[in-house]
Image (tube, rainbow, N blue to C red; front, side, top):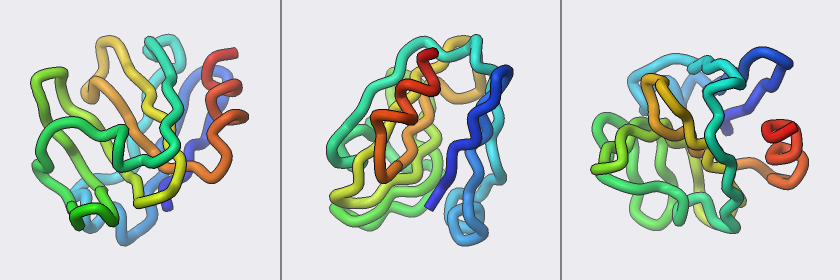
Length: 113
C-alpha cells in the first residue's frame, strides 16, 4: 500500500516495490503549496477518473498507476473498500494524487493545515 509522508514543505508518495512495478514509475514528490484541495472518499475506486495508461487495473478490486482523463493525469494507488484521499494539485506533473489510506481524517487535516 502506498504511503504519504507529509513534511512542512512537501509531500512524498512512497510506493511499494510491487506498486512501482505495476505503475511503471517511482515515488512522487510535490510541494505543499501546490495543493489546491483534498477530498475524502469512502471507497478509493470511486475517486479515480479516466483511463489507465500505464498501470494496473483489476476491475472493482485494485488500481495502481497513471489515470488520464479530460481533467488531466492522476497518480493512483487504491483498492476496493478502502478509504482514499484525492489531492488536487496546481502546476504539477499530475493534476491529482489518489491514495488509499486507512484513516483519511488525520491525513486530510495534515494536508490542509
